[in-house]
Image (tube, rainbow, N blue to C red; front, side):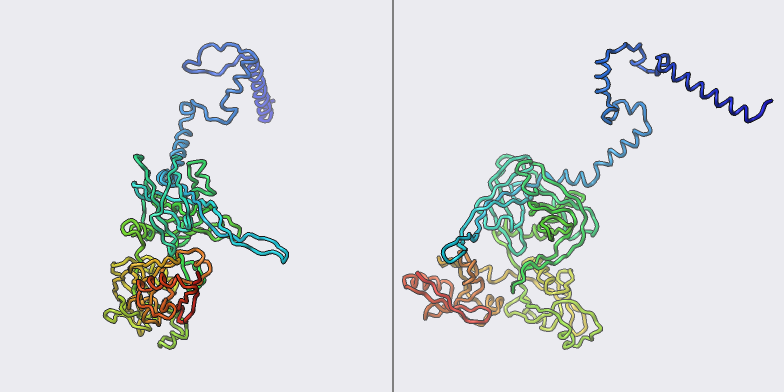
Length: 520
């Protein structure tokens, strides 16, 4: 009797028998795969050794892509081709563009270390000079062989060599450096070689969150392998101000670019590159509790670095701008004294003094008590902001200040000039320091009481610098019992008094009078 249940059972049994027969004949070699083209001929039997060789050469054994995949899997291959093309994304192309101009900077430096000794009374330490190696990175900005790096990489260098990405090594000389900005310019002689040059971007045109690439020679690997290392991240923040010196000078890393791209030891001085392959910054330092990268790296904006490089190439020194404005911290008490209600939130830097003979004094455009809220189109929220923004303005280039005066917002235009203390002739004394004249402009700039004397502007003796017995901007106003009236006269007096057993120097420092003794 025909039932649906019996029919289904018979159908299943028939299918099972068919599968068994198909498997049996396939094992016996009765069924062969259909081949096309040159593979359609008869297949010869192969020996056991040949079968083994065939297995070893089978691309599928090593997960390799068959050479004929394009003929057999057109739909999937189109997708794979699309993915393959996508591997060469903007980051890859940017790294390829920027990496050839990256170099490794190898420096021999002198340093003073305290060597422990032990005698009958116990341990004591003797200072000794040692030569140490320092490694950093840099990048070529000019086909004539100019390259940028960090000042701390080449500080106190005895010898500098540069290794390019093709493995060539050159001796390098320091064109100049700016410790305040931590930027240094080096020069190599390429001879007849054509150097790759970095394409420079605009560090004033950045987006928080855009992709960036840090390129350099971590741990000095570029000396042995000419290919620089690449790390990728994003711009985490812009306009960061970091105080690096808590002393009275309060040196600031200003308007820094923050990134989470790893910056490791040896990367200092290398370029921070955007997704177009343009250099937007110089990798400088990281915040780390362990010595390794934790995703907080900082780079100097390239616009500042190129301004410094231009000054060094054209004039051999950095021209520092001077407006003649002394500022102080804005506190709630000061705001209340100026008549601002406590409910009004005001940020800026208070104008404490206008220095005479300065651009700010001309025309009485500024007054003590004004609150500076912006400089050159950048906001000023604190004294550190003011110090940082002053690094980015240029000598003889008009700059606008936004100020708050009696509740009104005003704009004042000033033209900064070069600092008086840095444009005067420097007179070497032969005693480890140099002097300049104390002119009215210099006296106003450094705000001292003395109206005569000479200003110590540069310490050339490492011992004097380490001891701190004589400091830059000390005023030498008397030598023994003779009043000092100029730098040139002071040099003559020092040479004459060097024949004496003891020479007494009378100095003004921070409004106090101090004495220093020079012995033969």
